[in-house]
Length: 379
Image (cartoon, rainbow, N blue to C red; front, side, top):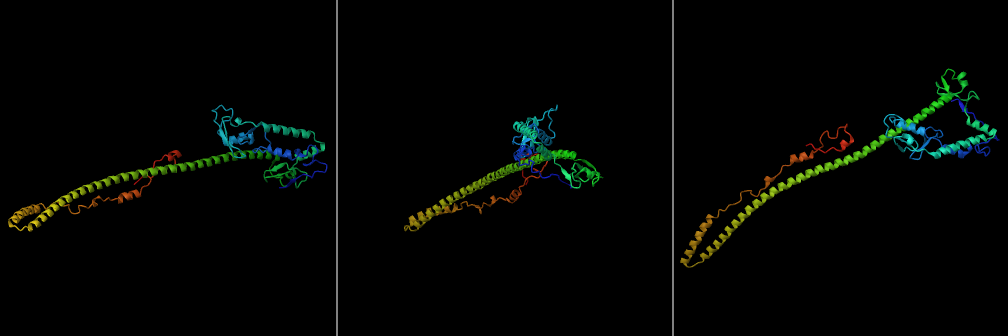
């Protein structure tokens, strides 16, 4: 790029930035320069133009710049004074800290003006005007040189860079256009290109801020989706647990029913066998008593007495023999194997419990419908 800064070192008598003569040097010294930096709008990069609005995050913007950002972030918002239905408000983000600013139906016109900053701007401009009026001629001349400093062409000394070559996309001077390397190129006044590019940059900032707002909104939606996924997953886990508790309750109830059947038949058989035991026990006791009586009769030495007692005992033995064939339990009466349960098919069915196909697969359903899905099973 063929240009250089065309400045000469200040003479010994001139008032530089650190000089105390003529109002303290350029722009009143470092203090005034720092003050001017605080009065620069972060959007247009110029000193705030009134009215100046203050955002909830305490950052300031020109109301025009705030409106540009707001309109870019909310292209469908009704403009102020429109005869159509009034909008309910909108949102945009502060270009300095990204804090979200919520507006009412008045838009940026509902933001509070920062009268303090506006007063500081007025005081600053008054002091600058007063300082320039009271400045000595040589200081004023030096100040104008500093204010109007421009780049000069390296090939044509003393020629200011005042045009822009559209073909080569570089700033240049008039001599380069007339006689130099850019004589066959398309050019445009540098001030026009400067104003256009500054406008484009400002518009680009507004568009980028709007794009950032959109990205931030998408991020917020996805964060909300993550939380909804956690909530829905926990809800489905609870429903699944309830389903298995229901199955466990059904199994437990059926188990108790089958256990009761076994217990009833067991008790019936036990009562029958115990009744037979008592019957056989009574018969055995009578037989033992008869045997004892027979043994005592065998010891009787008197024939008439023996014959008489033996006759009675023999009759009793005959009766005992006829009644000795008492009922007995059938073979394998104690077997309870007929109460066996075949659970192979049921166990296989339970092992293959799964969610019904198609449940929760519809991508067109909204988030709420997905969270309300009931757990089902297929076997």
